[in-house]
Length: 357
Image (cartoon, rainbow, N blue to C red):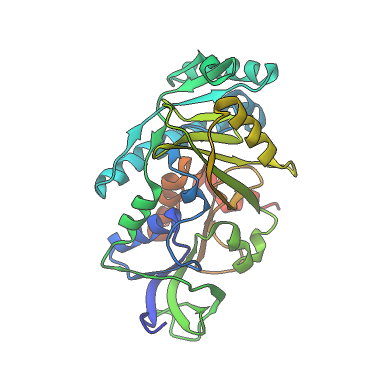
C-alpha cells in the first residue's frame, strides 16, 4: 500500500456507487478521502444489474401502506421521488446522461392485479402519474405503469464520482479490522488494518453492502445477504420500458442491444426457474449471452440503514439498500452526509429505528 498516505479525514470501505457518492460528497467538502475496495475494479452487484432507478418500491403501494401504515408508506415513496431528482442532478453535475423511461409493474396473478389496481388509485390520489395498462404485448394481462423511473449508466457514474483530486482509490485492499487508534484525537480516531498496513482516519464509512456485517457484527441481525442473478439475452426487439415481474422480484430492461434480466428472492425459493419462465414468456427464442451472480444487502424492513454503528464511535454505516438500491442511493447518502458533516437527524432511514428499550 505504498501509494497510500498514512492519515485521512475519512476512509470509505467499498467502491460501488454508494461508496463513490459518499466519497465524492466528502471530497467536495474539502476532506481527504481514501476508498478501499476488495475487488480489482469499482462497482457492485447492483452495478452489474444495470441502471434503472425506480419510483417507489417493488412492493405495491397498497401493500406497503398496509405493512408500514399510510403515513410511512407515503413517506417512503416521497423519498424515492426525491432520490430521482437528486440522481438526475448528480448525473448532470458529472456530465452523465439521465433518461426518463417509466416502468411497467406486471401482474402475475389475480391477487397482484387487485393490489396494483388499488395502488394505482392511491398513487393518483397522492398526485403520482400511475395508470393500469395493457400488458398483452409481453404475454401478460395488465400492469401498473409509472412515468418517473430513470435509466442511467451506474458504472460510468461511479467512475466519474471517484475521479476527484481529494479521493484516493485503492483496489484489491480488503479491510480486516477497525479499532480505536492510540494517536491524538485531533489527528485521527480510528486505525484501519488493510493489506498488512495501518491507515488512520477521523471517520470510517462502511458502504460495502453484504460484506459490512463482518466489520460491524451488530448489523448481522439487521442486514442479510440477498442472492441476485443477472442474465443477458440477445434480443434486438424493442423494449420500450423496464418491466417488473413476479411480484417485483424480476426486472427486465435493455442493456445495449440485449435484454438484461435481474432476479432475486426474499425466501429460500430458487429464482432461476422463475427467471427462465419469464424469459420463455417474453422472448422464447433469445439466446443467453452472459450470466452474473452476486449479493446485495437488504434490511429486515426493506429500507436502507444509515447511521453511526453501535459501539463503534466514528464508524458510519450506509447499507441495506436492497436489490432496487438505485431507488435509494442518493437519498441515503444525503442522509449520511447530513449526519456526518452537519449533525442532522437521519429520520426514517436511521439505524437506531431498530433499537428497543
